Image 1 (cartoon, helix red, strand yellow):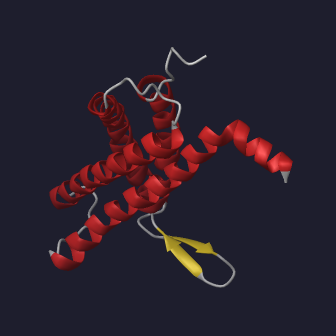
Image 2 (cartoon, helix red, strand yellow):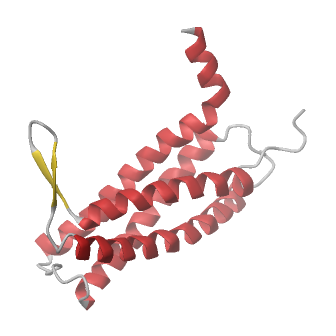
Length: 175
């Protein structure tokens, strides 16, 4: 058990970042997909044609709402539990500004890569869902889900680097 504690102590920041990154991804993806569900079920929009103006408008709205929910959740959890040794002399509002700025950059990365991924995967899959057999049930995973999952990993890694280097850097006065 002491080896496990030692490992955690040595890699605490990365472990917590990944855990909260996973939670942030869940919050973001839930917001993203809820936007699509509400758009289809409540407003009655047809989103089958990935090239239509309606799809692009809903997609853009989903991306913005996903980004906002993810940034707020991630900033709070990173500040409070992950980067605990960050410079406390930096005003929170300045940290939030730098944090949000980095997230704007990864928003555009997410936006572009997801859109390209959906279009590519949709074409490769001929618009059909990918059957994924879990042994007890078959999930039908679409291009949207696969693309978001892959891009989310890229975004989490990029955000860690930006947060570590620019937002929650350690105080120079710590010995």
